[in-house]
Amino acid sequence: MNKSQMIEALAREEKLPLKKAEEVVNTVFGEIEAALIKGERVEIRGLGSFKVKKYGGYQGRNPKTGEMIKVASKKLPFFKVGKELKERVDLQ
Amino acid sequence: MALTKEKIIDTIYHQVGLSKSQSRSVAEGLLELIKGTLEKGENLLISGFGKLVVKEKSARRGRNPQTTEDLQLRARRVVVFKTSGVLRDKINRR
Image (cartoon, rainbow over all chains, first blue to last red; front, side, top):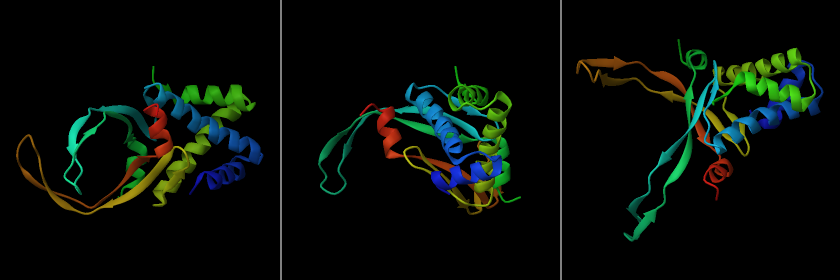
């Protein structure tokens, strides 16, 4: 399911105009995104939590050429699945 | 402070122009839609944000690291998140 299908399904199920459903979906993901950019944690009960993890830079090698390269430090969001979602998705 | 469902509902209320109770039910409806989709084994692709993917893990032999006891881990189905390149760049301010 992609974002536009999600908007359509939400509009149908919540009896909302498509435009409102789109605004809701954009607001929810926009808020999560803004929090992660600020480095804030996101915690949504039943779904899961997001937090940004920092990974240090290191001296690496291009595996093709063997050339030494510097790999810069980076930040990546990490998602931990919530209890309810975890149980519902798992087989039994 | 962590972002929570309450804050998201509040932002929907202020920005989308729905009543407080409508904002709440729509937020819960969206979360249920997300969970129900993944439960069916269907992936969720949010452009510019990332994707939530259902992965099948096969059974494997494991070990309790505390007791070093061998144990069998059954096949599982799990959800993994893959960040979109757009969001990754924003977080790293590139």
